[in-house]
Length: 190
View 1 (cartoon, one colour):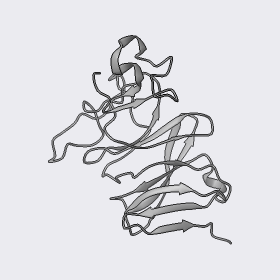
View 2 (cartoon, rainbow, N blue to C red):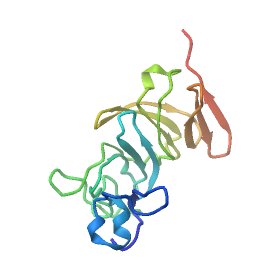
View 3 (tube, helix red, strand yellow):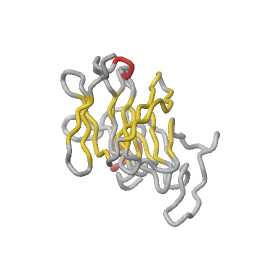
View 4 (tube, rainbow, N blue to C red):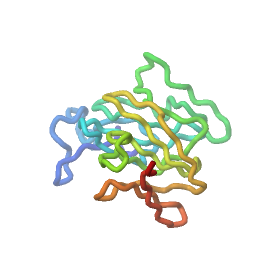
């Protein structure tokens, strides 16, 4: 609790701790913590309903999509649905263990590069869903978000490491490959 690694912070526009943070009474840097126990958050995005979602890279396996909630501990490094590098075991999330489990996880790893909650209309079946670029998975992945639930929906192989995903003003989806190539996705016309 003395450092901000592995935490999601909630700050004011001026950079101070936001009023009402869960560890406000603790003092010190912990006053800025919104949630703890994260390994490596690579993407944060708000859904249309205001819920905050995160993509998180696990160790060997255990990449996650988490619903970020105030005061929750997501378990790293005590629990994960992956293993340590070199095959050392990490206990899996279990009901009642005191840690917030991921809503979706991947083992083996996909290595998420970020996260986008799609708001456009060009891909109407995707509106409100998460799009996850996959580095080692060489894919774009859609995760269906419904309230506080998430389900793996579709995965498209891209034959390249996908570093980032973003949405254009017209609702087009853009991907950046690790090598720097920009790809625009358009809906297939039937």
